[in-house]
Length: 261
Ligand SMILES: Nc1ncnc2c1ncn2[C@@H]1O[C@H](COP(=O)(O)OP(=O)(O)OP(=O)(O)O)[C@@H](O)[C@H]1O
Image 1 (cartoon, rainbow, N blue to C red):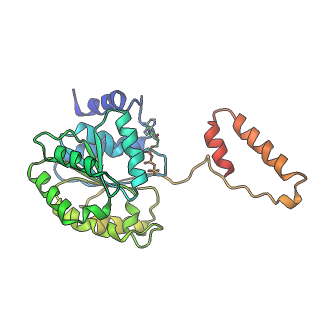
Image 2 (tube, rainbow, N blue to C red):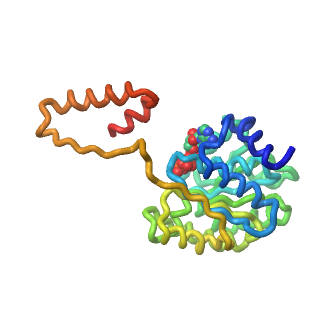
């Protein structure tokens, strides 16, 4: 089966989606798949709004590739969400973080040190990435040619111009230097040109970087201000709005309610 067909097959069989959500999602995913197999043009930068399906762009290639994809994520809660999602799909995903029990840590490390690790995606915090113990583990994985990709989620945390600057993200530059042969994928939902430049520089993404960007404009989100002083009955007005939103065709109730928050 050709590489392209395998992408669609994996999308359907493993992730349960009939099609890609957008052209950008498809192009970015295919670029990450190709990054391991062709020389040159390896690193990928993905900027798409929240909920656009950025995670699939590294998770699908991770499933297709032999070896382990390492994912840097800034929050343990975010990691947990991803782990739950992947495990429901029967994808072997693990994490190493400060909240892990000693027993689980031992189990994860034993798998990583085994001759054929089952782990396909390993989620780590930027703090852990910088520790000597982890660097040693990484070196071993690299020597054994077990590293497929390095994905950096919420990559804008690397930039002091971004809204979520995390000093530990800066240490990822030296991690990247040690893994310069491994394709790197930087993902963010919020990146201005300045932040984009910072990400590319700090993570030592190799030029020419392949960039996939979609507009952050979200047509389903809007702000509306009503002064309750001029409303006859503000609660009745809010109730009417909620009922209308919940009843709107094609709008899922949860999304409609979140509009009210
Ligand atoms: N091709 C697809 N078809 C249908 N659903 C999809 C597709 N790709 C992703 N999704 C779903 O879209 C939702 C959002 O995906 P995801 O969490 O990857 O978004 P994101 O862009 O990473 O958002 P964030 O910026 O919050 O990390 C998930 O429930 C995911 O399963």
